[in-house]
Image (cartoon, rainbow, N blue to C red; front, side, top):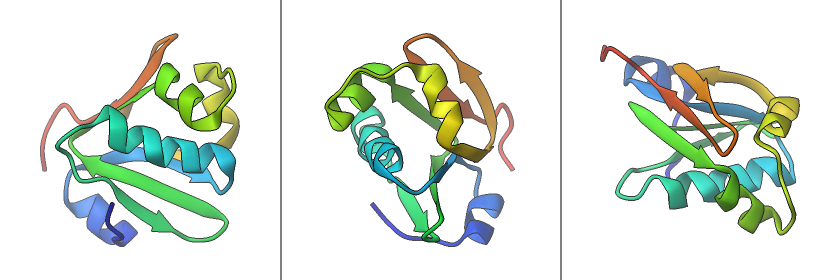
Length: 104
């Protein structure tokens, strides 16, 4: 996990969620690292919100988030703490994908 600025994310094909700080954001950080093997996950903690991003594509699986939270979780509950996101988003019942169709 690395720390970077929001400006860097904008200029480097970075995608991912911007979460309200809290337990869910911490679970999403861990899930991003687990569900995206071989990718460097960047975390920009602004206290009130946390930007979690990686290059070009990020998958988040419900099962992984549940394991990190230690309780059942529905993917549509992600929207409650999702302030914003970078890239495009594809939502499924068991996963969410952040991605770019074109590289900058």
